[in-house]
Image: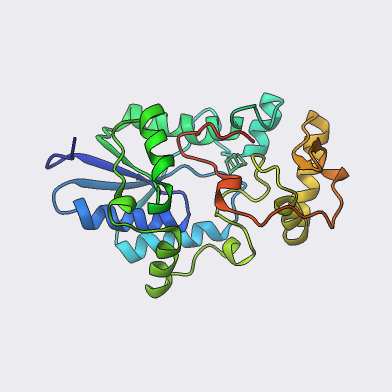
Length: 253
Ligand code: SF4
């Protein structure tokens, strides 16, 4: 299967470096003969600099970036979703991903023709891509894998184009998802949130205690955030530790 002339390809732009280069590569590989559109499903808990990045990338590629929300959650706030659902994480995912990403994408698909999807699967994520195609959608174009581009290649390409990545990368976050992502269980991650965004850490600690959710794993046990020692460290962070896929991939917390 390959795109035919005139097909519509939607790039699901997540504010990550890889999805920016996926957008650029889609235009390079298919832009002359297909309709290429970029869509973002916003989440209010992402850092505000992500929006600056989205504007910079859109200006660089000279294309509009469309924002699409789930009409059932017009605030696009994960905090609101957690309160309304009375839960923050499920054994195989998180309700915020389902309502703010997956259902927002499905709502877009109901109202627009989409022949092909592009996500930021990099050359080092071939297995993840293959699993995704098997379990979610067959019509995904692996533009970064085809171009043999790794996450680092994507970051390098952005920098050489003069595009400043979202500032959260410089703060030590492995991706540009929400700050205080509830899929993360790593003590390294949560103490990074505590150091860089103490107000977010405090808010997650209060809400997760109220909802009875032990977000962090320390010494083999799930504990509440307020129980985590400020000096606790696990292994260094990787992007896979806190991944919020557009299609709500079932990655256990
Ligand atoms: S990044 Fe984390 S907190 Fe944000 S929507 Fe995805 S799973 Fe939820």
